[in-house]
Image 1 (cartoon, rainbow, N blue to C red):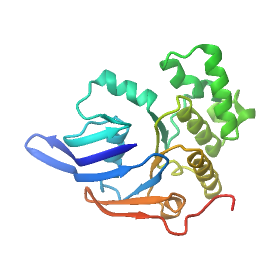
Image 2 (image 1 turned 180 degrees about the vertical axis):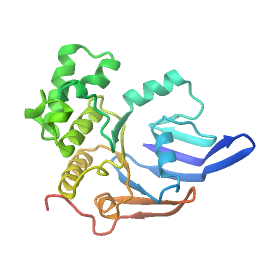
Image 3 (image 1 turned 45 degrees about the horizontal axis):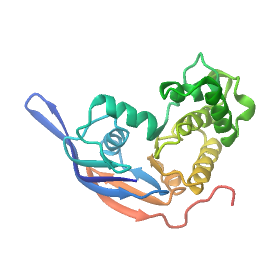
Image 4 (image 1 turned 180 degrees about the horizontal axis):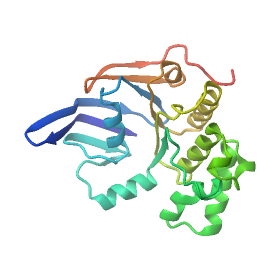
Length: 232
């Protein structure tokens, strides 16, 4: 599904260069559920921005769904972000004046999908995350966990090749976090490929594989032993 080869990211400030990623190599296969971990400054957020086509590589290759993303035009990158990548953020990033269903419809508006089809797909996505009865509620009328469910539904509507989640439980209590991880596990069982950044070991324990970053390098890439399965 995605592969990075000798991936380097260098930030320049005058004559000063800071290497955030130092020749990273790994693959994520279709239908995997991978967590990326590391302390602040380890490079995991930089990597997530590159995987999401929000930032460019300095050196190396990034291949997403068979296409080398490095060096593409901004227009093509925007198309990839909208059609191939679903984003879930720690802060939800919902528009406060729109209802849940209107927030979920947004990516489909940008994709040029007609109104009746948008509504149908958005309703199905909200039902998938257990919020079928909350479509007319605005974000301030929902709990944090419910807002994250709306964000997940929004990320799914264009049937992306991969779902990227950046600290998706960071603003949630433990019960809501467990519910969100249960939703992710259910989506993964249905075939959705998920890459998730987290700093919480117990959250990473819900995934199938963990990649640990330190100082811009991968220091460990391992299968999760004793995976926590929600609902069992």
